[in-house]
Length: 256
Image (cartoon, rainbow, N blue to C red; front, side):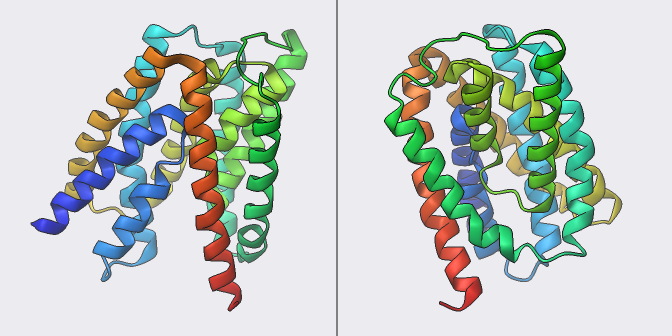
C-alpha cells in the first residue's frame, strides 16, 4: 500500500513537470523501477506510458482551451511522430541503444548552453514558417523525435519544446502546447505496442493516470498563469537534471 502511495506521488509530480516543459519520465520511471523490482522493464515502460498518456492528454486539452495551438505545425508533426515512434520501438528490440545513451548528455548540454545564452529565445511568438515549408519542417521534426521516443525516450518533451522554439519561432508557452499534441501521438503509438504484447499493469497504470491528470492540470495552470518566462526557467532546470541523470546512466552502462 505504501508503494502505491509513493507511485501516486511520483505520478503527480511527473504530470506537473511534464505539463510545463516535458521530462516527467525523469520523476516517474526511476520511482517505478525502484518500487517494482520484480517486474520486467517492458512492463514498467508499458505501465508508465499508460499513465503518461492520460497526463499528457489532459495537458494537451487544457492548453488547447487556453492557448492558440499552431495546428498547422502540430498536426503533421504528431502524425509523423506516431508512425516513427512505433518504428523506433520496433528498432530498439533489435539494435542496442548504447550509442544514443552515451551521446545524449552531450546533446542536452548543447541545448542548455544555447538556451541560456540566447536570453530572448522563446520570449516572443514569431512563427518563422508557413505553407509547405512549415509542413515539411513539422514532419521532419516529428519523425525524428517520434523515432527517438520509441527507440530511447528520455527528454522527448523537452527536445520538442526546444525545437519548436528554435526552428519555428514559437514562444515557450506555445511550444509547450504544440509539444503536448506530438507527445500524445508518441505515447499512443508506443502504448499500442505494449498493450498488444501484454506489458501493462492496467490497475496500477490507471491509478497512476489519475494522479498524472491531477499533476498535469496543476502544471498547465502554472504555465498559463506565469507565461513563457516561467516555462523557460523550468525548462533549463529540467534539462540540467536530465544532463546529470543521463550522464550517470551512460557512465554506469559503460562501466566507468
